[in-house]
Image (cartoon, rainbow, N blue to C red; front, side):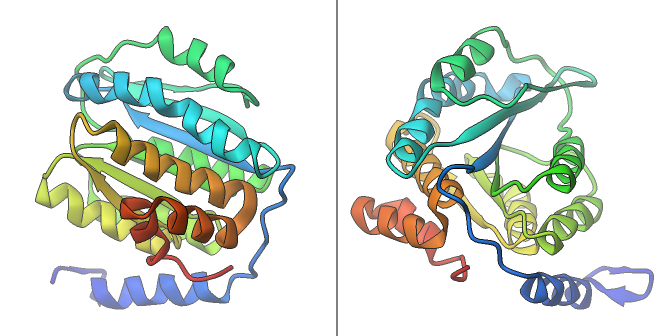
Length: 233
């Protein structure tokens, strides 16, 4: 296990998780659920981008039964393009934003996603951050540091991986854990799997852990597996 500044990585992770555990729990208000929906829009993700484009309304549908959801779309593409939309309260508005986006080749910019989420969460309570991607081309330790900061301010990161890259999975699992969130993997082309994952997080953002737990019980499969990674809040 590599060391950073002579402190073993396992010790650093434990320290972050201790801080997350001590952070005061804040229940999600049914009328003010706020969620950042972030995606990798580099070239390798074009098929799954179209899938996410079609399924984003699932989050609003689930949240509507719990009081609603305000969502911000974020994505990166190309050499250094990063975009964050205004906060949106309906699926139609989000769909219009996503329809104008095309995937472009480039390296991942997950660090920019996490930095942006930190800035937003320090201004106003963010109940959850969703990130969908298939690979990691950045320093995992630097990303872990940012994810740990999200955990300290009680902003869980839900990382959903497309495909089977084992190195990406290792990093994605660590980011989710450090933030107090959860990790899930879906098969390319499986609309049902991704819909279940997105619906579970929408339930969490709009109604808290209890709502997510009930959604998982109703849907089963990946949605239920996701709840097992979270502690009641």
